[in-house]
Amino acid sequence: MPVYEYKCNKCKADFTYLKLRADDEPLCPGCKSADVTKKMSSFSCSGGGFSGGFGSGFGSGHGGGC
Image (cartoon, rainbow, N blue to C red):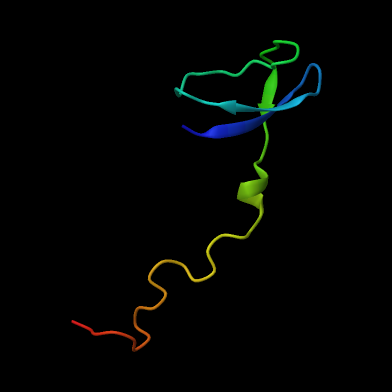
């Protein structure tokens, strides 16, 4: 169940919303407006991620091979 970040277009409030089902539509907790926009998450924009990736030790001569 993903948590999304939204901005209300009516009162300009920022809020998070736990989406339980695909057809769930968030309402602004402040003014109860349905006129909201999903924001780009700072987590997805950070560029951090995994530096080595999965299986980065494969093919480097470490361990046995088949």
